[in-house]
Figure 1 (cartoon, rainbow over the protein chains, first blue to last red):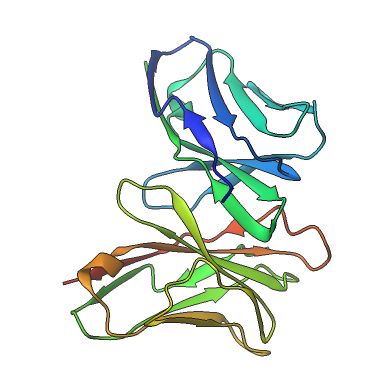
Figure 2: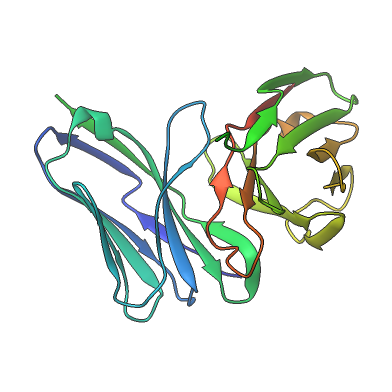
Length: 112
Length: 115
């Protein structure tokens, strides 16, 4: 069974601070997705990382896929209240073709 | 450019009734996935379907749950004789044809409440 450990579970910071969310596994994934979910809505795809060591930037968000494709991180620079939400990582591939394995999620609150 | 559509958005059923959840994938997408999000838990995979075929149903409870994706029309997740433990948000996702099934786009979900 593939598992993804996501940390921290909760993060409460002030506007302007930086933060990093981690996603770790003992399994190798063919790719890893990061999603953001608002209350009452479905997850919205932020990025897909595929290659070990890959780094992708989306404005103030930086996503990294570990060299061994077992872990990933999401770094937000100068967080804003609009960044508040639930962030989810999801791994794909390996022995579970077509199926995403989700982490438990990180609830981020950015205070003005 | 419609995304994944799910209906109803909210569904209330009494114990023992049937629940039918519908999902229309994004235009051009032929892979459909169903996930369940229980209160205070993460998203859990249930089933992966292509048109007229169930590819992987390893996450689906063996009893009372079934899914289909017919040649025409939406994908249906059917829960028979619902129990209170079935109360959850059910999400459908879709991906385009081909080998790249990793990137999945999610619908807004159906929130099922069993009284």
